Length: 386
Image (tube, rainbow, N blue to C red; front, top):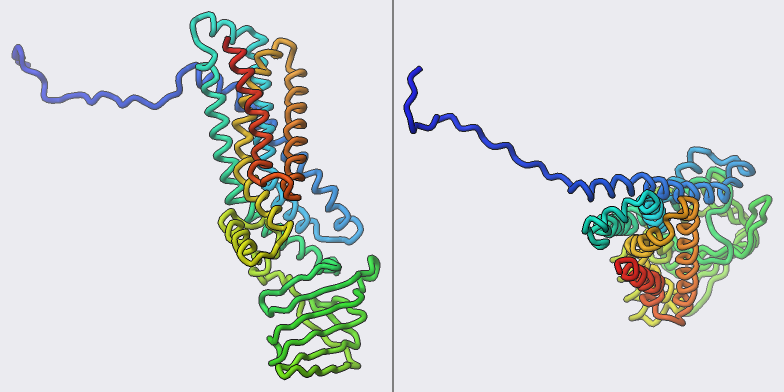
């Protein structure tokens, strides 16, 4: 084949694209942190699962509830523990990973070669931010929906065990009919109810009425009132009183298909997302009602962001502790993880009690543990760098 000097072949080979890869140091530190983080996360979630299981065991053992329903209830309750689980995972992962690096003099070798501690700490701090975002997403998007489903499952358990789906001495509203139910007491053995009242805002008749009964019981997902008295309030101001000698049945609230019931404002506030919580707080403030309930709602709303951010704070405090005490073994790292977690939880619980009672602003109460532990971590990091 003839060749000509100075002529470039028409067929050009495309240069391969460079793959996006982590720097060797970052990848190495990440691989050290990931396994103990997952172990710590799973251990905390398992602890919470078993804790709830022992509380729910009574329904399985004594009331012969469906094990499948109880297991579903337990699984759906786990996402509520996600913020603290991620915090413990970050603590445990950083303590064990950097404790091992310090014990094997790898941190010393890196710093001797001219790499600053802030450069070494880059991956853990970014790891903490990623854990914060994931924890916040679970706490904001998944946990409220899981709580709603778990509440629904709980009442399914109650229906199947013939227990009472209305808590004594608490008013409960059925949004489908507008009725409000009240039960004074319940016999723990027979489940017979005493002093039952049902308030009807003119849905089943043109008048507002109150139906009362000395005793009542549940059968076939209906409330059976024995010899009830019906008091009707007419627009003219007159009152009709009717004493019934026969039994009257009333559809229960909390029906398993009544989805709206579980999303009403009077339900569990942990089952509401931040937008709904904010709207509920504003409505209570405008109407001037709510009292201490407003402080509790504000605290729950503020905690939606404060607790997940504890993941980053956990990295901030565990990094210098691991460097300072890592040479003394992994056992000390585990002990320090549990100690820091206990102190953080204790501070969060104490501030939550103050915020719930209106002694301290809800936002300040939620963020104070992060501020205290975060400042301590920043000071120790500065000391380690020097």
